[in-house]
Length: 265
Image (tube, rainbow, N blue to C red; front, side, top):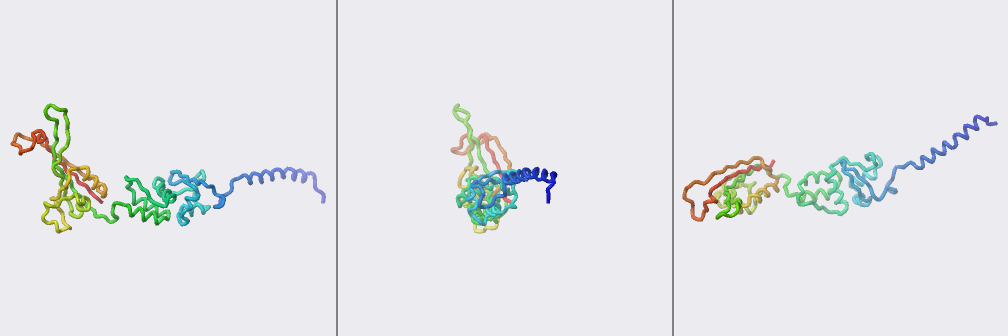
């Protein structure tokens, strides 16, 4: 059968066009598999970008990160980074655990509960248990409030010296439920003034601390999960009454009393 001139022209025109399409398809990036994945993989966790070696991310085959790399349908952002809709800041500890196999948290870290939740989501039971073990706050801690009060005075410079002012505390009082007070202050709590110290499920206003550092008391309360709810203070000017032996008139000139109410929910 003879081929017409029109058919020969159509064939000659379509051959380069088809060759061009084949070349473009060869240059188009193909979906990567585990075998040809790059050694450095970029991640997008809640908008925070990370980069890690493939060996690190595959260290725990049961981890969500490793399963996401093996899943070609796992979500990716516009730049091809593997995407996780989780807390991007806390993921740094997930990545550190995959790198080193251990947990190292900064001293000021306060998000143990949230990090344990992230570890559970990513399928890392070892990290989840480690976070719970180092959490300084017990999971079922008792709720309540503690009132801390102190009486003090301000001392000033004497004999024409510079105007030096400092705070002098005589005693720090602690009021609240006995079990809570013992839990927070431990051995620094003085119970000698309380005659009914054998009973635990009760309240007292007779405890005081063995030290006079109000900031140390605040640190104890903050570490145990208490937050400041209210405070009040008052001040008085010393009169001309006769002072006790050993009491300086300047130190007795301005006295003050302050109370702070802390609550743990």
